Amino acid sequence: MKLVRFIQDGKETPGIQTDRGVFDVSAFGEDFDPAFLQQDGLSRLRQWWESQQKHAEPIAGEPRLCPPVCRSSKIICIGLNYVDHARETGATPPAEPIIFFKATSSIIGPNDTVIIPPGSTKTDWEVELAVVIGKKASYVSEAQAMEYVAGYCLHNDYSERAFQLERGGQWVKGKSCDTFAPLGPWLVTPEEIPDVNHLRLWLTVNGETMQDGNTSDLIFKIPTLVSYVSQFMSLLPGDIISTGTPAGVALGMKTPRYLKEGDVVACGIDGLGSSQQVLKKFV
Image 1 (spheres, helix red, strand yellow):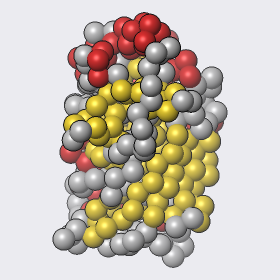
Image 2 (cartoon, rainbow, N blue to C red):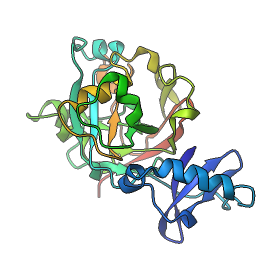
Image 3 (cartoon, rainbow, N blue to C red):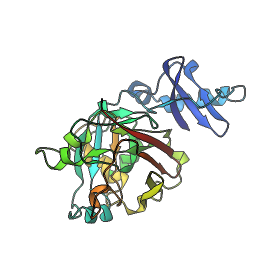
Image 4 (cartoon, helix red, strand yellow):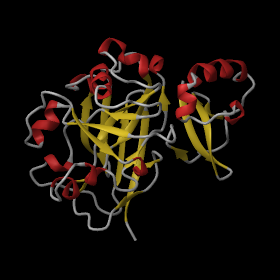
């Protein structure tokens, strides 16, 4: 399934995306939140939808999309998880996953406006595969790890590099600005993705290709990441692990071209759809 959330009559509404369009599934009675995931909501929704879809009609028009999962407790990001990205930033590929956090207050819909924060001089882009956790995971093994994955979504991990690298402390300061985590368009369940370890990721700025990578180049694969993070903290339903970005960020350029007002950033991942954000200065 492809789960989607959208604005209808001024409210965030759960839906399902199919080849026929977006369908309102609010009659199911649950939003796509941690309780839904913990209580086997995906299986229950799939069964309910099978009984409904023959008679359902897609909504009209192109709705404004929301993040495909709501009320996540945390976003755990994995740094330097592609060898080419580590090299372009002058870093040594890590021996263990590098973990940092991104505030959930940064989450927006996939096509919402991204705000360049006050004082920003180095706002950057990072297309990433995000893993959504489906049930509580504590101290799980790699062999068990995929049992805890609800699905996948597209994430553009915006970063203010001056805040991240030049202001002291943890990377979280450069990662957590409001609007710096567009998610979606969809939460795609695992059976829809034949091989999550071979998905193309791409990103353009004003139509120019900046990133063009593949999840086959991940240093630490998804089972390793879920297991590893669960050794240090409980992963809760709705939590997001963002798995890292391939080469092609502004930080890695000889002459960096950081984002400015009016820039248009588009990105996508095979099977997970695409998104587009316009950059605007904070006023």
